[in-house]
Image (cartoon, rainbow, N blue to C red):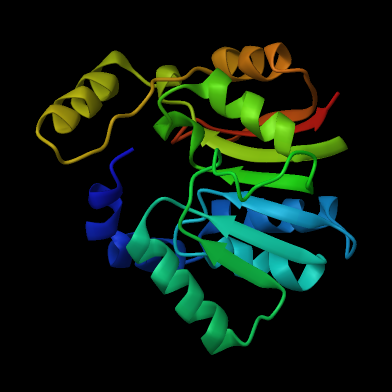
Amino acid sequence: MSTAFWDKRTKRCDDNVKKHDFLYEKTIDRTKSLLSNTDVVLDFACASGEMSLDIAPHVQRVHGIDTSVKMIELANEKARDRQVNNINFDQIDAFDHKLASNSFSAIIAFSIFHLVDDVPKVLARLHDLLGSGGLLISQTPCLGERSWVFQFLILLIQKLGIAPPILSLTTTNLESFLLDSNFEILETNIWDEKTSTQWIVAKKL
């Protein structure tokens, strides 16, 4: 993913996520129900930190990471403004040496797997970062489930530089990647038919 692309869109992305639409609320509510006050959580691709900050009061600690400098700057500003003390944000990727193996009891990954270069490689790293039996909680727009017309439009706006590289994942693709990466799928549902957003909870084996 292009860091510069997301740096330029930080405010727009934050304005959208702060609307807390039905999908946001559903995702946060279910995530909180899966976590406890003993959990140490990694928010992979945390963007402006809105979801991290909503989850933080319900867990022991949250570590949010993102490659965008501007996103992390905004996330840290929001954490200070809201006086949330059990959270930290770092401008790093998931492969950074700061992140130790087996150091998280849960990882949240929201609206990100369709934007990575290599899903199996990323899932292998997330598996490594989770402790035994740790949860990977995700929701992903599976654009491969959309019409060919929509997929053509996505390809077009990518070529015009209006959108970043996007994978046209299907729900079957994503589930297969998880199973091949030694995860057990505990929950899988399409939560939003309009955007083909798939919710998955998987456990590290």
